[in-house]
Length: 294
Image (cartoon, rainbow, N blue to C red; front, side, top):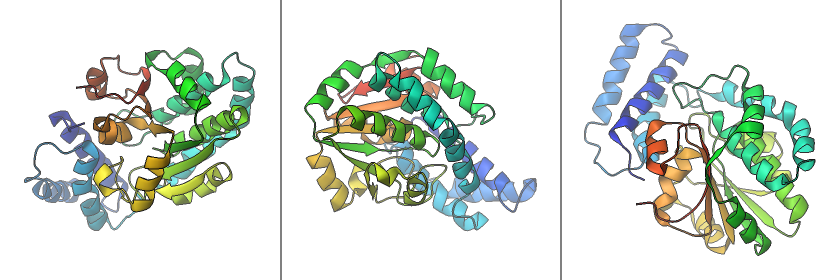
């Protein structure tokens, strides 16, 4: 999916928040001058890149300016801890339901609310908000039946993760899937290094995701999967997978053009651009099979 003009506003908002978190704090002049450097670095970016590829032009420079390689380190740990605190209760609630895997899918998508890259994200009371979405959230697109049908015939699941906090709900989905399909091997794909609040190997191991899945990386420090940058290992796992879960907007934006019927996109439409692109309402839950949209 190509970046829209509105994506620039979102990325610049992210840049301002990273600069506010840095040593510059409330020094508006230094932040202003830093933004001028960022603006100058992107003046020749061609049309047609994905939002994740746009971020490649911003975040390395922000790290250089601020001297901070992982600006959301504390938020990542905090959001994982929050979700781990409700993990067991949610697991019991899901297993007591009539459709545990579908409800676990909703839990995984609800976790996609945790995104410090979204301007309006407010972490206060996030546990109760996620529980409310699990119980009351509606699907704008619901291909869960096709997902369940494909699980029946699958031996290997490739799971492309997105954010911290959310990844704990992904772990819950994997655990529920393996309870009903114990033969399925799961390969979990995380970011190659810190980018916004996306999950890396470090955070994946902290929540013991490796107890349920083998861990590999995207081979890039970008907030979304970019097919051209896949490692040989990831390419091989992609080819061998019977079913693929792509979590979140960033991964959707990067790979929806592939039009692979094995892919299921699990996300929440968190911005107007994505909601319009998918023809759903902002805030809707989405599980969509990977057919080409446009």
